Image (cartoon, rainbow, N blue to C red):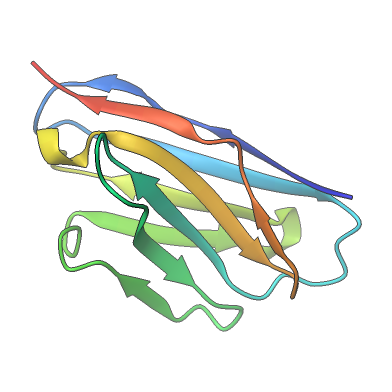
Length: 114
């Protein structure tokens, strides 16, 4: 059994920053890709950023230059540093890992509002 525990969401003003964390625990032999997805009100789930086991990253065009994904392999943890946040970044953010099975976190709310 693998569990993902997310933290770091909250309410922030436009232009502010937040850092999301997602720690994986349980029966994990190796973690391949790790990533973040989000679901905004009334919209479908979209990819925010991913990072593979070699450290290669991929970002949605809407967050390039503002968000940074990173991982700590020793801790099986993935991070998402979000800067210059905009109201359109408001969403529930979900952590995802591939081991190669797929696992999802429970989601953490990010609200960008003045």
